[in-house]
Image (cartoon, rainbow, N blue to C red; front, side, top):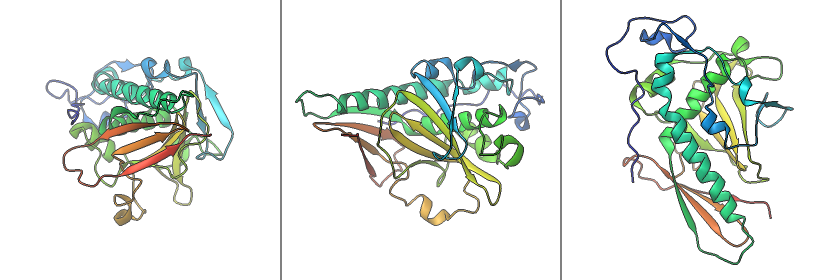
Length: 268
């Protein structure tokens, strides 16, 4: 199965207008109205008991956020509407992760494997949208203050990805090597930073015990080893419990020839 590529450009001819508060204003295709909606949609937030952000990946104190706080005037209504299909991709992916974890954790003696499907490219694009939302709303921080004020963030990758419906290699999803551990029904974020160069490389996500790094700027990183890494864009994520396994199939396009399998073991 291949998910249809997402068409994320605003419909119709270009408006040739740039709204000063829209972070996609460089496209010169804005509306005159600014959106004040959640940059992480209600449909995503309602799946979780809480949302938290850490300053530096998994090493600092968590800050909890309520859904009503996650609103900011950072996208015009035209771009906000164009990117809204990404919320459905994220909802389906998080639902799959939640159900896969719950099935693997069952205490019954049933041992059959249960299968789930998620759209890999759609989840990457949602993470890119979320990263820009968290940064421009000044929610994402390092240990000293907002990332927005201190770190450079390249916009060209987002402009290309939103235009083509694809994040290009070696950017995108990299499963962190320490997946598994305790499972919480919460959604967590942290910036992927190079503090020496003051560079923001992407977003770290923790969901249902899985830790996923989304790389969106590879400048200064070893490009040749990123896409060949066994943790890059896995095709299969096996969530293994004591008695059974849930298999999450991550769908990429037909050009993906190498099968990459990751095992996430639940705490016993």
